[in-house]
Length: 356
Image (cartoon, rainbow, N blue to C red; front, side, top):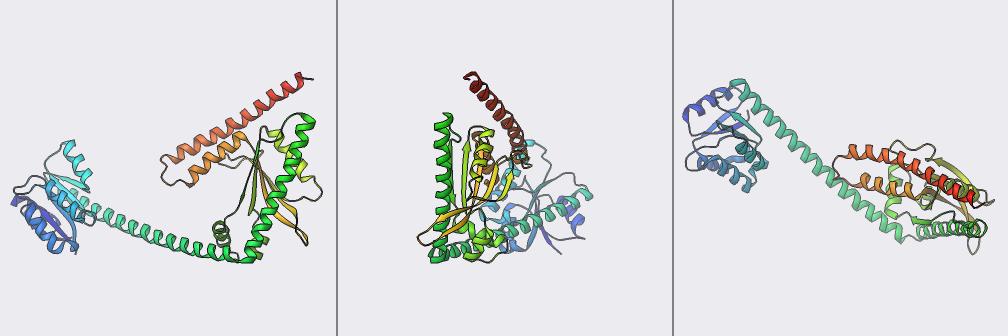
């Protein structure tokens, strides 16, 4: 049976609580705060809960709670305050100090039993949850250590470095093709088909994590055969029709091979994400050969890119409050952005038509 310590200066209340709880627990008593702390110091680890009066001689309940907090006992033993004091200020102070619950006088047998049982069950669940969290944190730290070790191995491996060089060449090849189109548009139509190009080469840690998540071998061949986003580019356009025009001109080039196309502009993701994704094979020209490398090219308007950046922050921030409300607002913003993009495009078209 679990042990409970009842700390109460009134003998009749001690006896009453003992009688209520003795069938389910081993009940020990203390007449004041000093005696309670002495008993906890001797064998606090074996105590399942403390029922504590606030108004006592020598040392009151608040002082006992404060001392238990200093010694770290309050994190291991739930405290239920037994008091005839009903003031909101007193209860708030107790809860702020770490008290689990209140049992008000005069005592009612069923309420006392239920509150003690509930406090013990909740405290046990809390401890189990904290233990799981600690175990998960330890697992994550170990996984991160393994990933770091694998990353270092990948960085040191000559075949891997060669592969990364080839993906970097693919990025430069795509950038060159798009910049040529940019120059042609500027010359022929007196306007720019896109605002900027952003590129990135996937880090060794991200590559290793993705291979592990997909259950794939951690080899250069596996990266080349199964990952399509090691070389990534994001093209930021002013208007939606520029996205489709530029993407079409790019994939029409006879040595660009379209592998897959995902149009999240016409069919947005459930969270509101919009972008046009192309997975392509791009030729690169090395000293002794021409070979094809995969690259992912994303086309967005300025507004779509701003939205995606904000959504990314929400996705990877773990301490954000009201995430459901923010997600709803982001979905609404996505619809507003679509309407704004096409309104601005129509204004541009009117301006172009007025110029003849």
